Image (cartoon, rainbow over all chains, first blue to last red; front, side, top):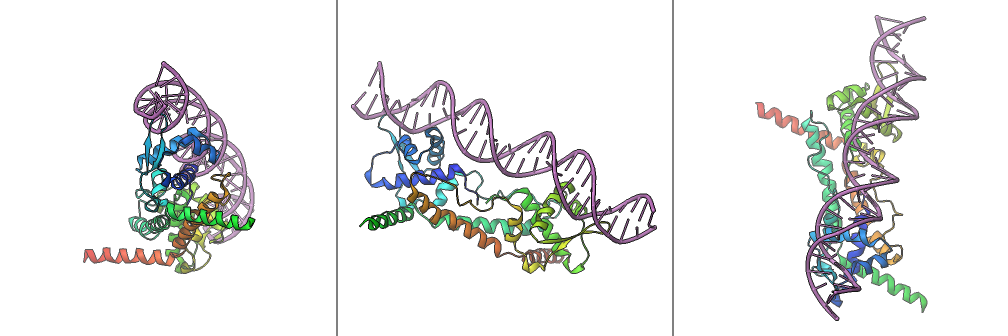
Length: 147
Length: 147
DNA sequence: ATATATCATAGCGAATTAATATGTTTTGCA
DNA sequence: TGCAAAACATATTAATTCGCTATGATATAT
């Protein structure tokens, strides 16, 4: 699957929020954009999608920012990417050979819906909590290296 | 995963060749393009990719055409789509947050490589023989309906 | 009030994709 | 032997998507 820049930024940004989830106070877009080294204006668009998808809460105005809408273990990579990506799954109405509905249906059943399900399952099995844990493991390994 | 028009045409065209595999004689692009109701010129480009991928044999000149390079049960949807699609899998070098290599690595490990493997497995599990069988089942069911 | 933030929408340039166009070779066959 | 039918090759155009920028409006803590 081709994951767009928006999708990758969204995943990374959500991990940032997750790492601050226990803190309770909102995180600003600009702080995340600086940490990630990408444009603030572009990240705003990503967060608009995340909000529309119900994955983050926002507080406007001074001292405002974003936080996760629920705990990290209840947010999967599938939730995030399907809120952001326009065409993660194959549109069911795409036609291959209109004149041969049987061939059309066979490909739909055996290829397109199967691969979509595989993607959905793979992405649904990874939560923000899992990713956080992976990062924490790496970090502690890195500390060990210095000792 | 987004499957391109070329990819869908390629799958359908390969099924056509598979349905004629036992016949032994080559099938022309124009006959397939007419059956599928799409441009002959466009299909030619698809077949160029299929040939480059070693999936079909070609015979030039009058009475020429294409045939499968091996039996239908040895050709999978993965073979076909990876011969055609330019970016089916996520390029490993795409950067998310250069400044945070641990986050970068965690996403790569837990999301990108996982979903790529899921796609590869799903597509590899479907052969042209499987698709043919599905179509034949549909056809016989349709016949039953008329009796 | 004002600074700081989210929020909304429009626009643009580059890249990709879908499809045409125009030929050139190769080969069976009348 | 020449003609028709096919693959093969490459260039071009049109449409769409993508990555990103620009501009401004709205809300809110201090």
